Figure 1 (tube, one colour):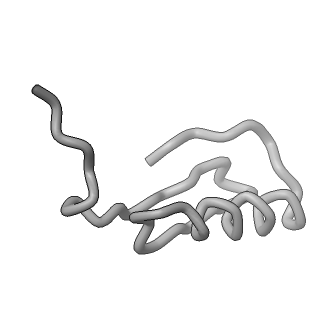
Figure 2 (tube, helix red, strand yellow):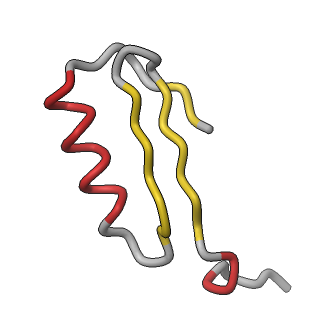
Length: 50
């Protein structure tokens, strides 16, 4: 979960759409009045370190 600055509904919708287009993102929820974003990522696509 990520904390966001204060957003209006249009800005929250744009952020949600942009995040949803990123590779590996399975689900995005942006709540403007709660100032949060929750992002679920496909763990199989994470970079491996080492």
